[in-house]
Image (cartoon, rainbow, N blue to C red):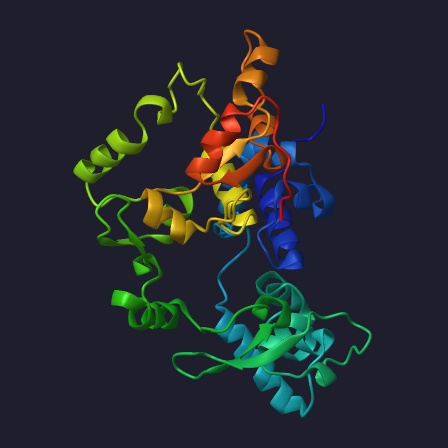
Length: 333
């Protein structure tokens, strides 16, 4: 029967690995560096973490590493040792003459070179000219003016830089208030029915073709321009549902055609004065043809409302075209 391993020997070996790694060992790390197996630690203490605690080893913090040494202390020690040596300290010199080992620096800053940069040493002072280090530049905080080293890649496209969240919040409270706040941006539009000026969010203006100041104006406008044969659901006139992309494609067609009737040249401004409504957008291949081909299925609205199937017309030309026996042909700009 194998001799049972003494508990104190297990604790001593846990402490040895801890000192060797300079951080609380994980199970995989102890498997690699420990004299015994992780299962032995678990069997004796119930859990590996409880064995580590029994050895007096602090548990890692939420970031996965020992956070006993503040980063400011690590940087102060780098600067102190550099002054003592009158040169940039190497990791070996820190191990031999400094207060800490290399691992806390690697854990906190990612690498020894990054720690040196954070301590204020320049690229030329890294003692390792062949080492690849992300390029940093000196920048000033927009609020307090404090100079700091930042990764050049992090500054791409940024007009303002802040040294802390406090400075960021201070800047936002001063710059993004009242009319300066991005959410207060507004675009002036006119009510389609009464002509009153309205302030609308840019996102609302982009989504909607028509704007109304109240439900009454919207109701009056619909009664005038969305009733009878002008109504989208009008069956007697052959109008069918044109799909969810219709309004967006309609707007694109009007803009493509320079807001002008492609048959007679009537402009949008003249059209409003004469008819009190927007220019019409005509389907060269009628919507009903797509429904007929689709049978019982829903037609492909991407084809129904394709720009090449749409043309901008005035009311008069639209009515004339609808009465023609053949598909009209005219140039589109």
